Every structure is written in C-alpha cells, then in structure tokens.
Length: 130
Length: 403
Image (cartoon, chains in turn orange, green):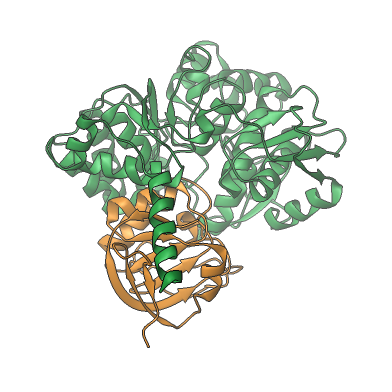
C-alpha cells in the first residue's frame, strides 16, 4: 500500500535490498555499512542512497540507529519500503528522512543503481527521469 | 490522461482513508504551537499512526521505554536525550529498559571512562524527565499490572509481546521513539493490535517435550513467519520461564507483537513447527560447542527463576563464571532471601540494571563463546558482540557446567 510516513523531496541513486533490514546490531552506527554476513547488502553503505528494502525487523532500539547514522552523515537520502514497521517509521520521523511505502508492483520496478526523484507532495511520488 | 487522473484521484482517496484524525489540540501541537518537544513527539505519533492505519490517538496509562543502553543508542542518543530532557517531562507512569552495566560491579569489567560517563548522562536525562529508573526489560514482572484491557505503550519487544499475550494489556510493538512520544503526550495511535482481532496464521506446535529453549525457538520461528499476531495450537501449560523465552524469541526475529493460544480462526493459514524447523533455527543460532562463560537472563530473571535456580543447584557450583542478569528490585529481594550469597558462592555474579542483550560487558577479544539458554541473547551475542554461542536449556547447563 502507498503511504507517506515522513514528507520530503530528494533525488538520488537506488540501493536495493531483497532482505529485510535489522538496523540494530547489523548496521554500523557511524558508517551506515551493513555488517551481517548473511545479508545481501553485506559491506555496502546506505549513505546518500535511496534505500529500498522490503521492511525493517528486530528490536525497537533500531530507531536510534537511524538517528545515529543521520547524525554521522551516513544516512540514506530517503527510504522506500514495501511494508512499514514502527522502528523505521519513527526513526525516520525523528531523523527527518523521507519515508514512503509502495505497492508490490512498484517495489519491483525500483532497480538497484537507478536514478530516481522522490517528492512526497506529488500524486505519484517516485519519478524515473528520462 | 484519463488514466493519470484516475491514478491521481485513487491515490488521494487512498491517502484520505489512512489519514489520522487529530483533535484541534493535537493539530496545534503538531504545528509547533506547544513547543518543539511536543512537535517532535506528535510528528513521531503521526508517522506511527500512518504506519499502523490508526484513525485517531487514544490515551495510554503506562509507557515503557527502550533506548537506554549507551552501547545501543551511542552518542547520538545520549545527545538527543540530554537535549530534550531540558524541557520534556513525562505525563504518565513511565518505566525504563536496562542500561549497559551495574554500577555496583562495573569496576570488574574494564569499561572505558567515556562509556560510564555517557551511560550515567543517559540515566540522568531519563530521571530528569520523570521516568522511573527501573532498568528492566521485564516490567510485567516487577510492577503491578493494570486492569484487563488497559492501553499501554511498551517499546521493549519481549515486554510488548508479554503484555499483549499473557497480561491482557494492549500495546503496539512500539519503537524507542514512539514509546517516548507516548510518555510525553500520554497518547498513542489506536492501531490494530489495540483492537480485538484474530490472527491470520496458526502455528501447530509439533515438537514434543519442549523446554524453555524450544519455546524460544518457537517464538523465533513465529516472529519470522508471522506478521502482526500469531495463533499457536498444541502447546500445553507453559511455566513462566518458557513464556518469557517465547516472547523474547518472537521479538528478536520479526515484527509480530502478540500470541493467541488455541484461538483457531477457520480461515487462518496453518503452518507446522516441527523438529525440522526447530533444528534449522538451532543451527542458525548455535555457533560453537562450548562457552567460556555462561549468561542467564535475556529477558532478565525474576525472583521466581532465581529461587528456582538456587533450588536446582542444590549446593553445586558452576565450573566457569555464570553471569545472572536481573532487575535491581529482584536482586534486593533475592539478597534478603539469602539467594545472592548462595549463588555468589556457586560461581555466579548477579548483575542488576543491565541484561545479556547488547551488553558491553562481554567482548570478543576476551571471550570466544558464551553458553546460554536465551534465543534473544544468542542472536545479539552473535550479531552484535561477535562471539560464538552454545545454546542449551537450563537443565542441561546445570548438568554439564556444574560440579
């Protein structure tokens, strides 16, 4: 379902994960690098990307990790999920990182490495340039 | 063009359906007319409300906050709390999750000055805001539970699941921020977990002779396969240790926040938890053959479990160090009953105010492996502390590790 959790307008490159993300314990709070060996984004940094992932999992303290990566300038520009969870929603609300959810079909159109614009005030918030 | 217009209209329509209705006072707080703290708190509640399809906010009577351990919230959390505590004050009864150490024995653990001072700053910020310094992940065991059906906001995942599943309270699986926003406003989104509903998934428990480790793995499985709540059939009466283990397991692996038991909805999907599924989880979380030390408590132990441990030991001693994590109030009661002396003589160290989960007291350059009966502890010891984990039920730990 489409939802706008945190408003904003950004432009950037997609970093897409097929796996859910547990922000607490599997993401470095300073660098935004994922350090879980079994994760498909292992050793990748989320910094300055439009982070696309199915949903967040795990302990609620993960919201502070989102706030931490923002304070350390390692946060994504925006996040796009298929399903929203409270940890990601509130972490993004406090850190002021735009967050939307999209339908399953729209999610599958978001490919790793693609450039997109995101503007939550538009009726269709994701635009592929060109 | 028609297509675009339709999409546009549909989209607006969709948004209207999910938009939270706020009262005039709530709107004013969201606009910042009641100060920056309230604006932030309401922004969090609105994001949470949208996330959970809430149509309004409801009053809550008790908030339980996570985000206390400096090891997890770091400098950003410490600074944030120090900042908001200048103005923010809680409006309802508010309890607090464990922090990183027990001040009474922290000198045994070689923690940095910086860690200790930042942790004490976090403690002070919460106390300044009017939060009770309970430092416990088992609020359901150390406070009197309010009457059936009371709306609360519990951030700690095992506590939220326990409250919804065993204590007849109602809470979302809150985040650290949404619970804090609830504490500051006395409100929370009226989301589906707060309403009466039936689970869409039933797990048929097929493992025989389960112990607390089995229940932890069942919880971990349920968290993986379930969404919001899960119905479980085929479990008998569980002791308190197993209930806590079940809740801890679920909270670790997913977004679920409630168990129903034997409330089968004919339309629900069925899935079996059998030996095969259990072994998969065991293999994922059991990563070494033996531990250099033992930890008990994630969730923290209550008085009943500590008394039971003393009884089971029957004068035997641990062959290696055993760290026992419990709330301060439980340690005080256990001291009066003579349990703390007995356990100390049996090679245990009793730590209050902290927990196995995300502890800074176990470091990978000092410890290769840890033996525990906690699924939640195992997950975080492996993923956050980076040490191996040897999983065993308490009965087996006592059999193998004491003399």
